[in-house]
Amino acid sequence: DAGVIQSPRHEVTEMGQEVTLRCKPISGHDYLFWYRQTMMRGLELLIYFNNNVPIDDSGMPEDRFSAKMPNASFSTLKIQPSEPRDSAVYFCASSPGAHYGYTFGSGTRLTVV
Amino acid sequence: DQQVKQNSPSLSVQEGRISILNCDYTNSMFDYFLWYKKYPAEGPTFLISISSIKDKNEDGRFTVFLNKSAKHLSLHIVPSQPGDSAVYFCAASGVSGNTGKLIFGQGTTLQVKP
Image (cartoon, rainbow over all chains, first blue to last red; front, side, top):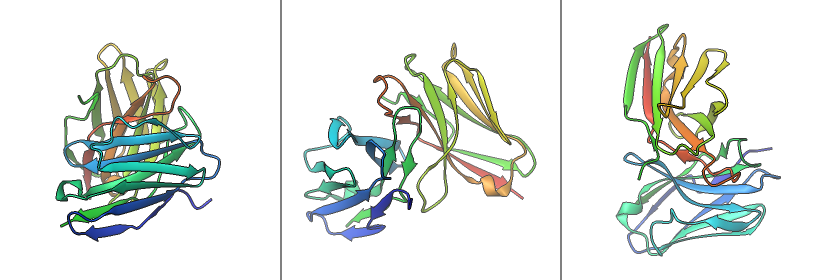
């Protein structure tokens, strides 16, 4: 398996533009997580899915953020409109279940100017 | 409210010496703890874990200690090697039932000097 695949690796966009981050989890993993890494808060959970269903989105900072998982092999995190404070590294991770740990993707470094 | 805290942003040790990374948590319902290691431009990778029914777990040069009464865990690396230089995150799970949701700390950057 190629692991968790995220795209793009880097994204630079202007304030106000829509940004879409993509993730392909490991086949057979029932859980998918979106995290954001910042210096102040470390790895911050934004939302997670179980069997394609959103379970907890309490970490999504604002209505500007939305996430979908239309099928078991694909998820998107969308920011519309983007703001400079959204600049961070966004990670997607998948897991077969509790206590198995996560496999992370390589992340998307987002810069909003 | 930070439920998992790593109060030391950075740590520097000499090659061959012991590295001790610390982590505190506030929620006594956590029942499983993990350490992840992250190199620049890569995603975090799993390093070692411990269940709340244990107080120690060892894997080669890495040992995790859990003190439930103090709500504290630590990661010991002996001997430290330059390749261990990375950001280390501790994580905890179990509050929301068996969901696999992990709460991470802020991370500690370890530098091992040759």
